[in-house]
Image (tube, rainbow, N blue to C red):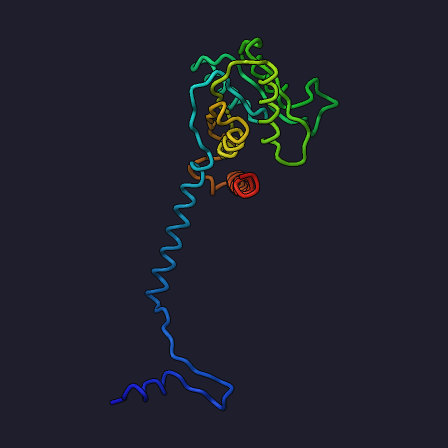
Length: 228
């Protein structure tokens, strides 16, 4: 029977003063399976939860609905439905300058295109205000929020709440940046329109879904870290 001193000799050996052997605990096959299964469950949970987290909807009671001008025509139809249902006083379209086709179009930015589309779809043009976003290389959504606030301030309107109408996973980031600009003076809500280019419940099955989710997740982390 080995005593404690003999046991230590077996678990810790030195050879010629240069090499050393130490006994250690290691995972069994069953242990690796448990760890791999836990990682897989976490990964699947992220797949399921990342879309609803980014495609955030939390509307507030407000007088103004702001639509991000780059969203598609189907989302603009949803904008009209929301505007009519909640009886807003004003709808504001935003958007950066066109990066292609300016020489062929009568419209110079996405704010104008969205306003024209909404009018074509039957919305009263008297209810629409066009607030273009200045050309910038970064922080376009933040720049858009600042432009809207400056416009509202000049109009001297009595506004207590606004809702941002965005598309899919861009919604949470827009909501975060507009809150940064408007609150606590004006309450900010957000409405996310479901995407039409991929299935929101299985976004990982399409290249468009994967590209959109990954890029927006990175952009959201960037905003949280660099624009606290």
